[in-house]
Every structure is written in structure tokens, then in C-alpha cells.
Amino acid sequence: MAMMVPCSAPAAASVPEPLTRFEGIARSAGNGRILYRELHFVRRVDARVVARTVFYTCDDGRPFARKDLQYVEPLIPDLDITDARAGTRTTVTRADGGHVITTTGPGGKPPRVHRFNSEPGLVADAGFNELLLRQWDALVSGQEISFRIALLGSGSIHSLKARRVERTAVAGEEREHFQVALGGLLGLIAPAIDVWYASNGHALRRYQGVSNLRDEQGREMNVTIDFPPATVRTTTDAEWQTTSALPLTRSCGT
Image (cartoon, rainbow, N blue to C red):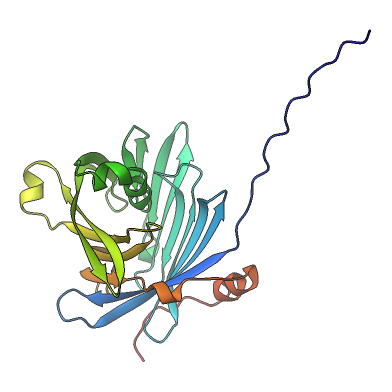
């Protein structure tokens, strides 16, 4: 009698989702003036974000900066940011079991290089958003969570704490308001970051704090960025490629 060898069940195939597109409007936290706009293209596989491209544009739609992210390590994604207004390019790459931040500035100066290692609870750039989503249940239940962030500009690492402030309703949609602040004594003097997410679906609806970009004079910008739900739609690679082909302008002035 032949022995029956059980067959292993085939591994579930990854399911890529349609490319998603949405917009953000960044206004001055002081006077409400539109400073720039954001155009996001997001790729998901099995409901997980795997790649994102963000185009930062003048109010008239001309892009001046671009950020590409690959979420191989979701809390510390590989990234490449080019800002034509500032004349800078910053990358985060993985090397020798750690990460390398490389920043090239204008004028042909040697690049600045900072190295850091991964550790539990450490994030960089958009990994901040991923961590809050992973800690959603803890935050909503009232727990304060602590984590650390590697700053792209300096390579320094700082402790942060996040907490839920309240649940609000905007245009009939319930939203969770979280606040993130520096830990220790720095938290008493440094401004906090406030973020609002849709309670259902957890989409980011508003960011309020320091921008990751500088203005045309090289100054920090305190911004309020709204991500209207009406701008969210599926799109095609052709639209992404067309947008990618646009040159980056060095000034939003006329």
C-alpha cells in the first residue's frame, strides 16, 4: 500500500491593492496662509503600506520637493528627499545592520553623514505615523506611550511621548486627537505635535507642528496640514509617472 504524503498548503499570495492618491494643504499656523501642498501616492500590499511618494508643490501645483519611501523596515523606512528650493538631498539607507543618514547641501560641500542602529521603539520620519497606528489601541485606551526618534537633520536621537487628548467630530466624522511631545525637560520648552486621525479607518486628517521642510529663506515653518477625505481616490501608475516626470522648481515665486 503506497504511503500518502500530505501536501503542504500553498502559501497565500500577496495581494497588491490599487495605487492610492490623496492631497494635503499646509497652512501657516500663524495666519492661515497656504504655504505649500502635498500630493501622496501610496502603495499597499495585503493592507500594509510598502511604498509612498510625496510631492511637495507650490500653491499653483509646481513641485519643488519630492520624497520617496520604501517601508522595508516600517518604523525606519528607506527614504530619499530632494528639496530643490533648499538645494538639499537627504537619504536614509540600511548598511551593516544599522542606518545611514546622508545629507548633501548646496555649493558642493561634502555630505554630512550620521549613522545609528535600530532599536525597539525607534522611528525616523514617516515611521512616526506607523508607530502611532501600531499603538492605536493603547493610545485610545488612555495609555501614554514612549518612543524615540532619529532626526534627519542632525542624526540625533530624542525621546518622545504620545497620548490621546480627546475624540472630536468634524463634518460628521469622529476623529482621535493625539499629542506627541519631547520627553524630559525639553518637553517643557519645545512645541508639541498634534495629529488627528479618523476614528474609523485611522486615516490621518490633520497634522499641526513643525514642518519637515523649510521656507525659501531657510526658516522653520510651523504648519497645520489638512488631508481632506474628499481628495482620496485610487489612481494609476501612469498618473504617478506623469507627476514624477515634472521638474522640481527652485522657487514658488512668479
